[in-house]
Image 1 (tube, helix red, strand yellow):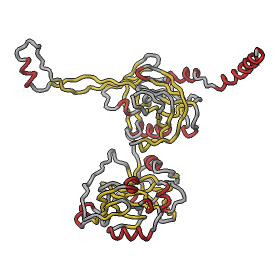
Image 2 (tube, helix red, strand yellow):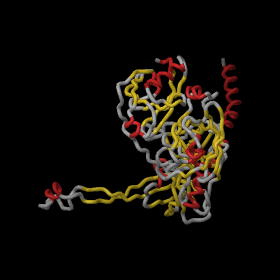
Image 3 (cartoon, rainbow, N blue to C red):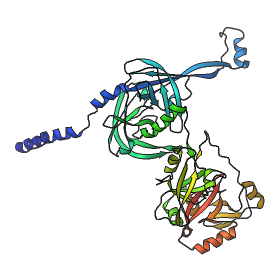
Image 4 (spheres, rainbow, N blue to C red):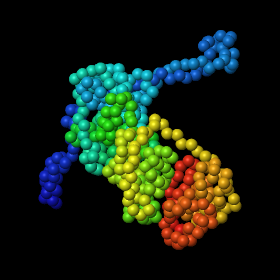
Length: 457
């Protein structure tokens, strides 16, 4: 037994150096890169109303003004903390746009305790990137890395000021790449399990070579603290934005005037695609760049300017990074074949507004595929600006599970326009049972394709 224990201990002693070599050592990285990371604090003057009167409680007018007097304006300072990092020795600093949003004063603090008032050169809310400038020279700066070379499972390091604790170092691995987040159409986020907390925003994400590969921007949390899901903006995306901010103070993006959706397996089958790829156009802005180029609803964009569109999330990023006014070739899938279209890219406005039209009820409904349908009157079609379509007055079963809602207007079945419930019934009968169909549905001012199988009823 003693010999067995000795043999086991000897084997552990042999393996230990190997395990030690495999574990990462962050000490050198933290020592070298720490000085290039800064603390960003902001001050904002907030107007509030203070209802208490400007008298002592013993004053005879106190009660009167407390009950009947007008609100008294009151100013107070709101402060917030974030992180940033130096990208040039002459004082340019990157951080998140939300860190400096609406700030009256921005202060940058270096690791050597020097403090500088910073000027916001520009910020871009769509990518959450802001460029600052301080009046200093000879500053330590970061080295830029290549986010495309990152591999899932690779070690990465974050340095920042979580909860105000300056120059804190945390580490983890890359959990995923190219993540799409709600309301974030222009950033393919790097997902990590690096501990990121409030105050880390705007700080750098390093690879093991000490190169910046991202800007720590968001966390997914139910509590407001770290839960293992952190998201960073790839540094190449941030630097494209930075270059425009430095030269013009704003960011110009391309647009083509389409509403798109993901191509699911069922939709790919209904359109004759061999696999679910590309971005499906479900509506085209009248008079917009896509409309002028001849793009139509039901077209699937496969390539834009020779860049492959694997999913619908890829298209806004590719189009957004294209210079407005550029002429590009768009490869689309239309009615069972590929086609090339030449398009002139427009410019994305600062804000986009979407109008909504109230739905209107039609005649007595007829039931098909779990939907109660009725024809639209001429007045209803005129009010909605459409030539055909039938109204979904009620929905249940398979159609409801597929995502069809009461008030939707069915415009087409498998790219064939629908003008009446009777015609809709005939189209379904021709298709037969067990077929995957794509319904083009109008919802408010938007349109989308919804896949449905005819045999689910």
